[in-house]
Amino acid sequence: MTVRSFVVVLLLSGAVVVELACALGVLVVRDSFDRLHFLGPAASLGPFLVVMALVVENALSTNGVKAILAGALMLLTAPILTHATGRAARVRQFGHWEPLPLEEVDQD
Image (tube, rainbow, N blue to C red; front, side):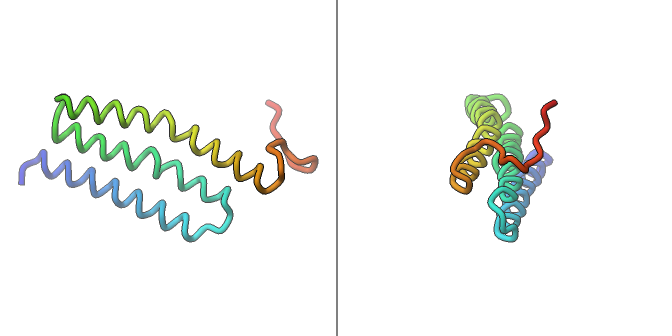
């Protein structure tokens, strides 16, 4: 086993551990808003580790550049997906997304 293949296996194993930990967190936590905290690493850190493994394996070939672009797109859209999901859950629960009168809101 070469050093390159060892690094690839290590990165992919890390990605699998991150995804499994996030899936377990989603199963354990009851509130949908708390579940969103597990969506972030699953949508950003796991794919980042997979992209890094692909770059280590393929260097900056066509496949490596495509993996970097796809990973960058996922890193850019993951927070948007999390925010949109949270807003949709709030609208479903309360009928609107504005804060309720008794909720604290930072105005800084």
